[in-house]
Length: 65
Image 1 (cartoon, rainbow, N blue to C red):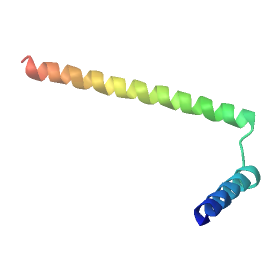
Image 2: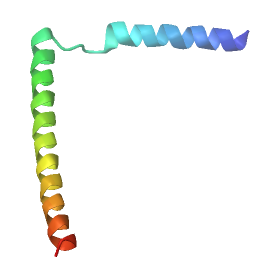
Image 3: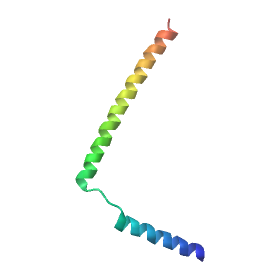
Image 4: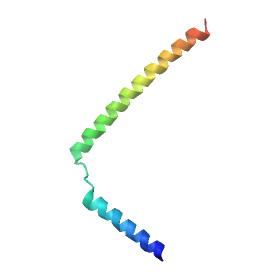
């Protein structure tokens, strides 16, 4: 029974924190953050692609020589 009481207390505290203590972003803040993450992801993907391409060329030069 103590387990269920503790579980219920934890759920109530979690709900209270989510409703009253967490600061949720506005729609525009969320949209701006989403755009930043998408742009950063694309930049990182391009950089990794270029590194992979360069290493592939180097490996072909080494092994085909």
